[in-house]
Image 1 (tube, helix red, strand yellow):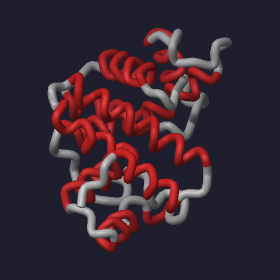
Image 2: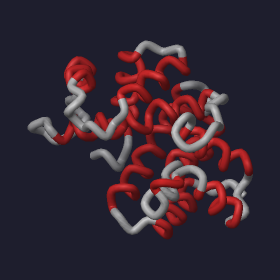
Image 3: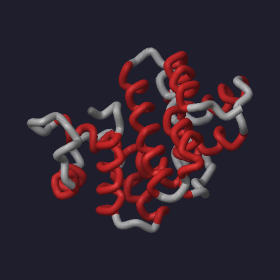
Image 4: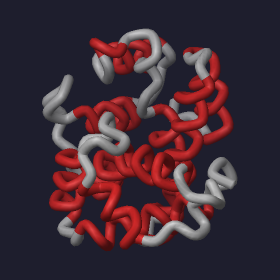
Length: 185
């Protein structure tokens, strides 16, 4: 089974009580859907979006087994191995050795941390919105290791490198994707 985005949200909510991970999953889902359309995978938008929604399914309850426990959970739910692999690949080099291979997996790897950094940077703006956040401002926050210290700059850069994109391009596209998300406005 490959869940629809709506089913993925219901699954995420069932396994996470905290609003942060619920919101993060929805935002990353929308970002992934935007990238699917932008990069020419429009027919796979729902799949990309479901992967984004479910990528941190196990994090609230099992942070030390993140992406390991979710594989078990998804198999118990009867999910397709493709979605299990795709969601787990974003933990490459941390908890799993599943290297992002497909462009979608690389986008997830790069954007997971970056959406957190962008959200934190937007929250500091007078508007509290991504709508007026520019790459130049985000790059200043990116260089300040104390700002949103939990967002790994190394992973963001590694993701950009996997995609073969300049960091500025990854930032610009992810800002655009977050502007388009109904969960960021």
